[in-house]
Amino acid sequence: MSELLPAWDDQAAVARARALFTATFDGEPDGVWAAPGRVNLIGEHTDYNGGLCLPIALPHRTVVALRARTDGLVRLVSAQEDGLRELRLADVGPAGTPDAVEGWPAYVVGVAWALEREGLLDGGGFDVAVDSCVPYGAGLSSSAALECAVAVALDDVAAAGLAADDAGRARLAAACVRAENEVAGAPTGGMDQAAALRCAPGQALLLDCRDGATEQVPFDLAAVGLELLVIDTRAEHQLADGQYAARRTSCEDAARRLGVGTLREVTDLDAALAALDDAEQRRRVRHVVTEIARVEEFVATLRSGELRGDLLRAAAALVDASHTSLRDDYEVSAPELDVAVEAARAAGAHGARMTGGGFGGSAIALVDAGTAPAVAEAVRAAFAERGFTEPAFLLAVPSAPASRLA
Image (cartoon, rainbow, N blue to C red; front, side, top):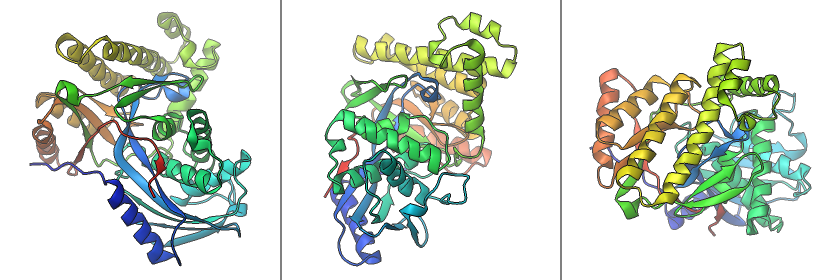
């Protein structure tokens, strides 16, 4: 029977981060903070198109123990990476420049770099130890979880107070997006950081990426005898390898051709498609416009009543249609994702789709409570039959946003 990857409770998370910190640096940290990974229920590749998306925060989190410094030096250690890294904040520059930061430290110092440029940090430096139970490279926003854990830590030690309310958290999220885009060089939208900082337990976050507005949408699957199974295909997904950027560039070019600021403003899909002469670009636009509509329909379904009977079938159909669109029109799926989706559906899932940026990563499946291990086993068997790397699994329960743990 396939096992489900557990999340750490607060006590275990604090103990792990603090132990790594004290083993690496002299003394104790100023505190320990954590931020969650995320699963997007529906609304993929809509964020950078001014659209709608519907993520939840995972119980699986990245944890940082951090201590402020006054000399501008940053020292970093991670339980998931080898060695100690050191650099100076004054030497940090954008990706593609001589001062670019290589590897995972870019996601950490990029946040400090962005906060300093927003006038929210004085560039004093810090020591930081990182540990995480968010699967790496799984399309579950491990990078945003790291950025947002660092953001709330730096906000706290600087006594800036931004994490105290949603407006401040939105500013922190924007700084984290800037860090990922400009310093780490990954041209992502803002959904992941918004989820890590602005989600709420038991709720899905309806995020309007046109203006950053949010609404909390109740999402209590346990109350209706359902669970959300996450399938980490172990087909590692990368956002900085050019494919993601190519999709974003194609959408931005289409918007210019159509005379709109973003594809969110397309109100007549048929007319928009007729106005574009490139078949690939038409497919990209069709996905974005129909995916935004699917988010609206999914939220309306959730608000119509309990996910049972016809409402459950309607939600499942939207989830399935999202995967088809991502596979055929946006072309961001992968063989492992398609097999995971097909095997989960065949094993009884009510709906399944890839989640995240694609090109590998994870899929989600809406399953009856108690059947997740059996569905996971069916997926594992399908992967073994095709010679794929063995997948991993976890349950997604809408959880808390980034916060201080100790």
